[in-house]
Length: 314
Image (tube, rainbow, N blue to C red; front, side, top):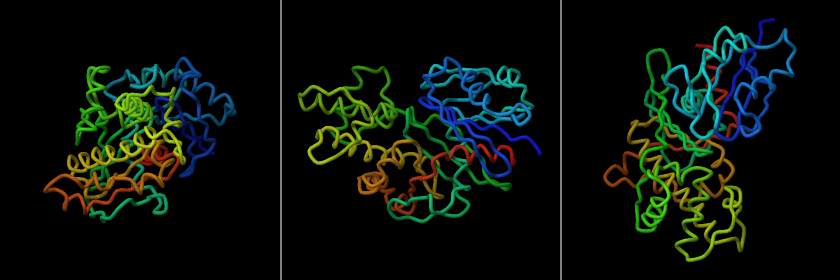
């Protein structure tokens, strides 16, 4: 039997590992980044449970950060590594490393229809670009462009564009964040830590102390919960709509816009009834253009794995 390939989706909080044999992946394990000093330690720990004769000789990683050369620096975790050094340490014949939202973009054509949850109207145009975005520990963004042989993934760092306010309430939040950060990026509100930033900013505007908070606390909405949590989630969904609309305009993404990441699928029922879609379309004279573009929430638990598998196939 041929040996399996190793795939890994390395985020700011968790590293997800699996083996690829044929078209299926197996032995999925999730490691907390905080539990290992180096990414190499996490890989060793994962491989330790695999018999030596069955260990992979080839690997593909997606990483939450730019891949511009041999030295890869993670943007929201302490990990960094050399691609050549990693390949040599594990004796792999090849190691493919791409941005996480390039992998997520490559996953889109592989997604089953039932895992594409449409929010709002619109229909995908054939042979047109696709945009992907996803709030998690950070805010990822990327694109997929059709070509004669299939698709080309566009890796970007769009989550770090400057955050734009659409009304005085959002402008007040930006002003509060500007006192703390040299650059107020979209990621500072459209991510897990961003939810906490929104909550704390709203508490300041309300003149009340913020309770010690986590993203899970902010999104745990129930009758009688902290009203600033409820408003933070509503603002998060609305502002994500504005960001998604900007991305659609930038890419000309008439093939659709796909929302991934660890947050939105968990609050899907809130999200689909939020102002996300209205704000997605609210671009003045370009509203009719955006109204024709479908938006989806991806329900697959490991979309980057689907994209990484295509690297071996291609």
